Image 1: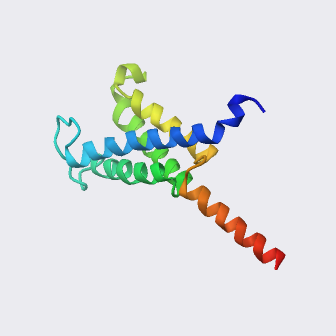
Image 2: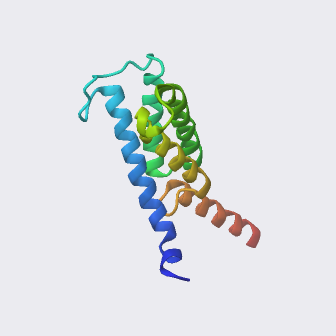
Image 3: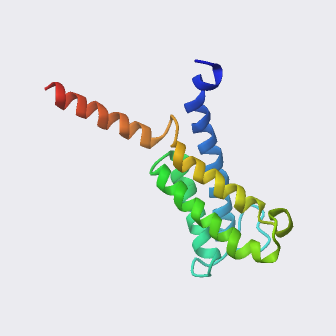
Length: 141
């Protein structure tokens, strides 16, 4: 086992927490007009910014703690794909031209997270370990 394999689950966990935090901050900026927002708060009923901000805030928090990580990441990936193709892509073909780089990167990052899982230090991981321990105790009883 090499160094990359040994630290895999911990690096995935740090990756998940950092990306989730950045996503949560983006949602807070959108919904509450904080963290350097130049546009002010967006109403939750304002399409598409309000629902997008809510997804960013809630899914970012879930991804940080690692609860429902794969589902939250998949929803976030879809939201960012929507943001890219509906908001950014009509402006120009390439992400560098249409300011859609962040949406494109988030889309792929969250899709990857949905497939690789939360790593260590996640509520999902703790719940799975507890469930496995309970099923082992039932089998041995």
